[in-house]
Every structure is written in C-alpha cells, then in structure tokens.
Length: 331
Image (tube, rainbow, N blue to C red; front, side, top):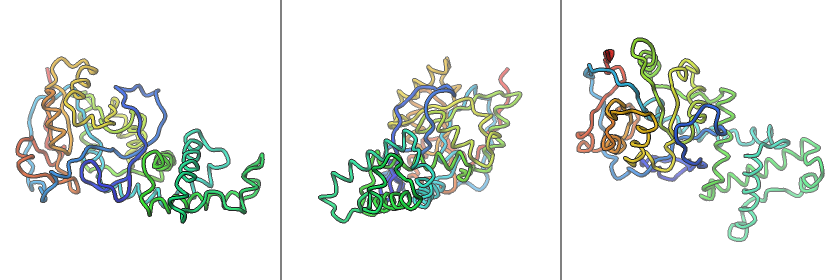
C-alpha cells in the first residue's frame, strides 16, 4: 500500500507488489508474501455514515452449500491496515540487519531494483541518499561483504535513509513497495503481527463449517491462498480459524468488480446452482457483480467499514453481524 495515495475504494493506502491472478489454489502452490487487499475505486460512492441498526434481524434460511467471503471488512477490520504501514516503517532496519548477509531471492531482487532506480533518479533528485556510503563501499565489494557489524549497519542505514527519502517524496511506488510484503510476511511468521478478527467470526465460522451444516467457506482476497492462510493464521485465533476454511480465491486485478470472475468461481466449485453460493462483502458494488453472476450476496456493515450512499445500499441485502444468519440444515 502506498501512503498518501487513495485506494481503489477511497481509503488511503500504499501499493503492494502484485501477484498474478490464480484460480482456486492448492495449499502446496506458490510463495508466501502477505499484503493487504488492493481494490478498484469506489471513492465517488463514499458518503455519510450508514451506522449498523441497533437490533439486527434474524435471517432464518436454508443453509448454503458454500460461502465466499472477503477478508477486509468482513473478517478483519480495515483499521489494521494502519498498523501494517506503521510496522513496515518501524521494522525495516531490523529486517535488513537480520537478512542482508544471506538475502532470499525476493530481497535480492528488491535490492537490485532499489539500486537501479536510485542510479536513474539521482540526477533528478540530488538530495536522495546514496545506497553505499564511502565507509562501507570497500567492504561491500569484498568476498565477505559485511565482515564487520559496523559495515553492515552502515549499508543498512543508507538503505533505510534512501527508502525514507522516497516515502517522503512519493518515490516509493510500484515494485519497490514489495519490501513491505517481506516485512509483513516475516511478522506474520513470527506472530509479532497478529491481525484482529471481528468478534463474531470465529464463532460463526465454527458453527457453519461444523456438523450438521458442513458449509465450505472460501476466502476471496488479493493474493493466493497461501497469503490469505498465513495472514489469518497469524491472528490470535490462529488455526482455530483457518481449520474452518476450505481454500481461497485470488482477487488480484479488480476481479471483485467483474461478474465474470464470480461466474468462474461458481464453475470451479462445480456448483450447479450459483444461488447456493453465498457471498459476504462490505461493498455494494462487489455485491452487485456477484448477484449478476447469480450468487446470493450480503453486504456486511461493520464499525469502521467504508460508508456508502443509501441508494446503493437500498439495492442490497444488509447484515450488521454474522450472527444474524440462522441456517437450518438442508435435507
């Protein structure tokens, strides 16, 4: 995500590195790089607050066979995005100090790109800090690049200064933001970053996925299933949440705003009647596209979610909590 830039849904965030769109992914495929979702613009539709109703009505209905759900705004609050951005700012030096001696392929690629773009941009931005200070240049060209801790720290400090300058001057765009993915991924793995969950999520997912309903639950977010599973698995609920999830779909590339993408999901799940696939989202525009594909869509109104004009919401089935669903078993 990019600080100061309006997100596609009207929220300020940074741009993260992009992963190709994938169909339903097996748990064994793809690298793990965690990032917040990136979605197309809806800022024209953000308006005055639509607060949840004080007494949510109960929806007594036959169970669906499958549920597709967004992560942001349904499972995890949008406010956690601010925590992610702060974490990336604060922990860059710590991450580089720990990994610069033996960088992984993703970090090597990022360092190469940072060096290339710095060379290209120094003429137009002469105040940009150079990547290798004179005190570390000799060390960096030796077979053992950082033979002393001081040499390593000097190089890391130069990188951090360069990145800080870029952030302050709106030069930290596109692929360079992939360093955030590495930081977040590391934070999730070490469980120092724990995404919060809305209070009703674990209870409802457990009830839906367990007997007698046995509803299959699929997440729909930017990035492959491994990304989504790592993100949710790092929450305080950990595997108590992820055990109830069947798999995930990659929403990268504005696919949540294309009815055809929902049709593809229905086909990949071999669901003969698309109405048997429920979709939970915070966005009336996404709900509209899902409904056009035949899904049964619900807009979840959460505290802190984006706000939409009443005329947009009037066309949707609204819920204020997942506990409103009172499913009875299909027999």
